[in-house]
Length: 418
View 1 (tube, rainbow, N blue to C red):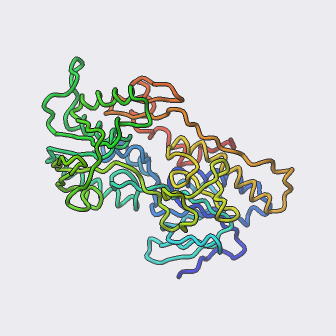
View 2 (spheres, rainbow, N blue to C red):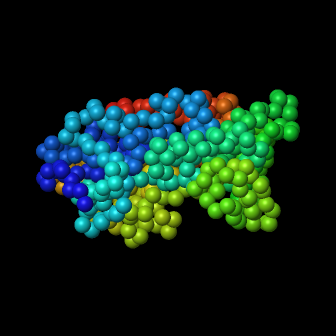
View 3 (cartoon, helix red, strand yellow):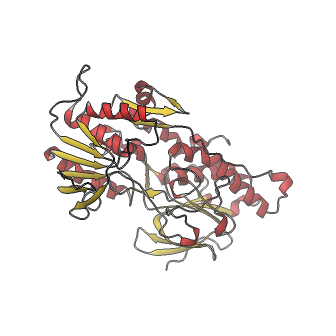
């Protein structure tokens, strides 16, 4: 077990996870919390991530087709470079994966990318490890190299594919179907209701009564119509029973597969893409701290993990505080970090009267989801209102939020305390 080389007196604020929640929390604390603490030089923010790069995960449905879809230097951004702006002793990056959290003794074990392991004691801890997708095409389930290898294997198989089956009718499944449909089949003419005789058969299978179940039925119907225009068929109200061979689409992204549905029907696929559900990355956390769906049981207003002890928090897809969505994470960061700052000030001896009350988070539960379908179309709602296809293209469909994440990774988004 490698020993950590930091001074024993150093108060470590450990953040697990190098995506939206973890990177944002680190920037916010370094800008607005640590500089205001007594003996600020005795605190260090440590960010732990299995990937050395952050990436715009929502862009995966288009990015998986070709590197030419996006500027790669914007799609993948060096985490370490993003934090060079801070005093050297105030920040440290560890390239590794959390393997065990001992919340009682306040230590976390890290499996380092070098093959060694390290045990960190922490003064405060933020769990922001996110969730893994069943298909390795959609996120940094391991690191950027594994993601690129998965894309490479998929791209090699794509030109020879005549049938593609996508499991799941949520945004990832619908967006992937739309991108592949337009790329492989083109788009039906203005006056055609659907694309006749597509070059590649693309089928989306969902157990729900509609695709995009978080949106109203009329919007879901519009999405299904747009999918039909790029040669995509939707099968609703039936679950996928099994997929053979085992590991098709998950362990092996490029293999022929037979997809058997609960109603007995079978679909032969040259490529199978599972796009249903995500698994919270909580294997290192005690089950006593988890909810029934595997997320960390998190106070929905303060983001504290109340059962875990002092100064332990969770945010993002791994936390139970709100439904997994980027806009919820962005809304959570100022609340979380204000409460961390308050806890740190109180522990340093400040009086309650001087640090104010807890800041409380209230999830926006209005209908809110934008779903591009190809490069120029899309459906969605914002703040409870249906939005036109052009708006979906303008905000998300052009580049799947790539225009917005540069400021997040660099910390500019959190330049002001909000």
